[in-house]
Amino acid sequence: MSKLSVHKKIHNDNFALMQDSVQRIQQKQQTFDDQIQAMQDIDSHVRGEPTQQEVRSQKAQDILDRIKR
Image 1 (cartoon, one colour):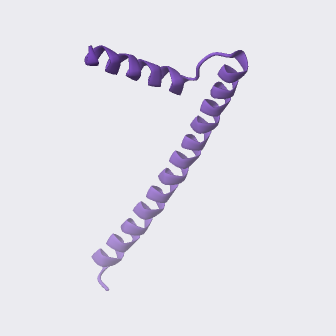
Image 2 (cartoon, rainbow, N blue to C red; image 1 turned 30 degrees about the vertical axis):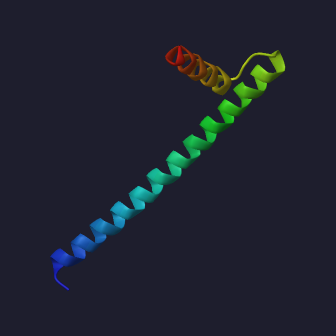
C-alpha cells in the first residue's frame, strides 16, 4: 500500500466517524424536540386549549372550506 492510499483510508475512516457523531447528535436533538412538543401538547390539553397540531389542522380545514365555496 502506498502512503497516499493509507492516508486516504485514514481520512475516510475519520470522516465516517464524524458522520456517525453528527447522526447521534441529530438524533438526540430530535428526541429532545419531541419531548418538548409532547410536554406542550399535554399542557395545552390540560388547559383545554388546542394543541399546535390541532390548530394547524383547523387552519388547513378552514382553507379547504374557503376553496370549496
